[in-house]
Image 1 (cartoon, rainbow, N blue to C red):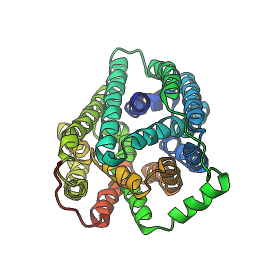
Image 2: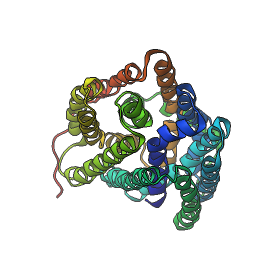
Image 3: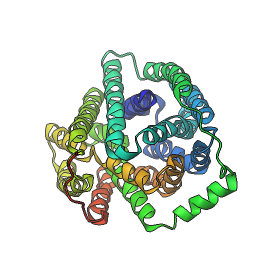
Image 4: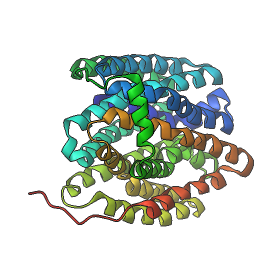
Length: 375
């Protein structure tokens, strides 16, 4: 929970700070798209091996080391004077985050295998608190004229302490008979041929279009197309984050009684209405209200879908992380594509393509289950 809080604290703060970072370092849309997209591509190469290592006795070592590297990359991000070191820091941050945060999540699921949806919702709520703190912090720094760099410097120090603490608390995995590199990769390839695994991976990436991809461009969109000031845009990100957190807190008790898939189906349909209206309405205040509504609607998408993926591979939480990294190969190109489209067609048109996310979610969900009650 601690490292998830810090991870979201940093990344949410970055999304809110993009207008100021873009101005200070004179970045183009394509450069921002590369910073958002290329790290995910690097992760697709590195994180499968990290995930497989997470199912071995090396989990604690990889988790702690990833957190330390993440902290070093954050420090580099904080002092970057130009685009290139900012990009390099981002490229390192992504797989390091996978090692520290991804394996921490896997450990949580291993502790609560029979209650995956609520465990993932609790995890997401912890991240929501971190994101709220990060966006509020960057908004305060911008409003007072201090700038965006101190937030990342603080994040670097906190992540270093957090990584060491979490690594110390994580139980050492026992060595298993099948703990070989070749076996892990062969099993992973076999998993990719299972339709149920492919379904959950595809739905996770589709849902992410209106979560991380939209959030990455939201502050810039509100400033360049909505007429907002950087401070107002940062405040909108705070509201987005608060709405996501509220949605997760409301969802946790509901998941004890009702099927999460039913909520996904209803909420994806609602997003198909709210998001296009957000893009076309001219009034800034109405835009902010609508995008906050979108955040409330999509708050449960990631925890429910990820819990279903974990449930499809019981006892192999590290492999779930590896599969997610492989599926991100395609997803890594999406922020870059949005940046290229924005450069040539304008950001509003580029963001309109993200409507494909809730549409795929609505059409691709399996049949729902009956409502359930705790005994």
